[in-house]
Image (tube, rainbow, N blue to C red):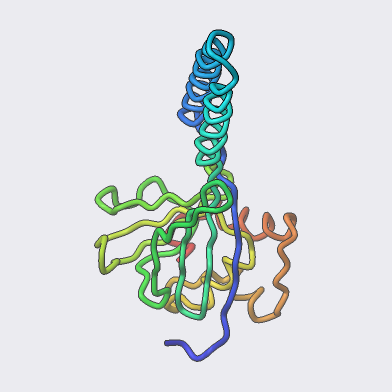
Length: 201
């Protein structure tokens, strides 16, 4: 365990996919159809069937919540935890990685090892996509895709093995200019993203 204080948290919201949109539409259509079905019973048999209408609306609301997905990155000293948050209230731990054992860290490369298990915890936009490769005790060779802010990048860079440290992030770490401002983040990402992978590491 590294003997330094290294604690950062950051949450990103996942961009809804076409699949999410399709299932949302199907869910709403089913809700409307079920509500109309129960309303017919209300007209013929009494208001007791209004409970069915309210039940359909509640189930629809509960189901739609699961399409609201966020990912939280938590760095505590040498541990990198990735949690999936659904509907603001359900949390699942996706993976935990020891940062001092990673095999690679940098901007996402399409030429990465396809045999690795992929844990996609990115925002789904592809504009700020990073990857971290490691040998996980449960999943084996694993690639984590994530969309960090500057604080997360600096915290990871502080803990990874020396050969994977990125010079631009080390400079910020040493000067203690950790600023989550968007312009500052882009100033770091752009020069790194234009390099060859071999030059980044």
